[in-house]
Length: 364
Image 1 (tube, helix red, strand yellow):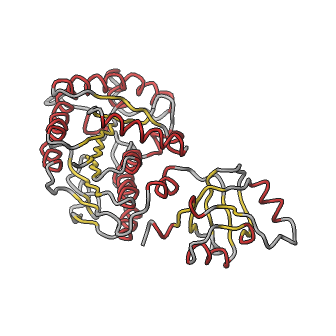
Image 2 (cartoon, rainbow, N blue to C red):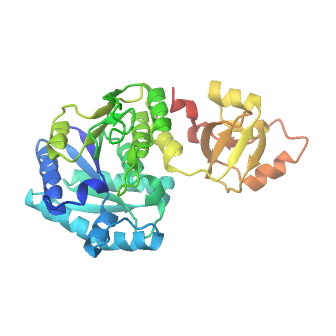
């Protein structure tokens, strides 16, 4: 049994004179139903609410202001789910709508609860359909058109495979639509190769907010947890059907050779740090090379205002982020302690090792 997470982008769902959105969704749902009938599990992460809302209103270009985007999503979300429900019901399966924001995933409790809900729906034979809650959150614009969301969902439920369907057939060295010399990339094996590709990526389109850059980011997040990621052309539903049968296509991002746990992945990617803690050389060595927790005695300075149990970045003496984690002390407490010249040798823990993840764990 394989647990698949499938992400479908906005540009694939808008339809045309030849194929309506309902026709396109029906084709995808047919592939998903065949996959489920052979015993596999599927979670769908679907964009498209804003695009369908604009389509219903006759808006030709994606709005730029937040209120118009959220209003379009409010119109399109119900229509989107109705299309999925009608299609999956024809193939004998129920669906469930899961709307999430980054704030939901940034809380460990909410992240855990979301994972439990998704797993229960899978246990009941339901197809969960996840989307960012665009009607109340501006995060969809920055979050990567559900690309990042799909990777976080995949890690939360310990999926085996993540499929990112887009409107190009595979990853290229440059945008193949404007560069005739762009070379296809069918395999990405090492996390450092993925990191390099992220930096170089510039591909984007008008209706999807993610582009290739956020798909590469999603691949990094998922592969770090041992998940195989496929970037493939979703314009042809046969590609999805073949992937769900175990065939190759598009670009395959292979799992990290030393996967991190779901908890570490959450620390690295789901939360948004709100402060910085700068270390001295000794503390850098202790947490990077000796598996130690971060003690107050190793803190050189801090930036930002944060409370107990809030996320922070950990910065070395060269101003480079080397880790991030959850602080067990408030910024106010740390600042007062740093002002004391005679800090106790019995230094309190600032960040325990269990809630600290090294940047080197993600790119090595």
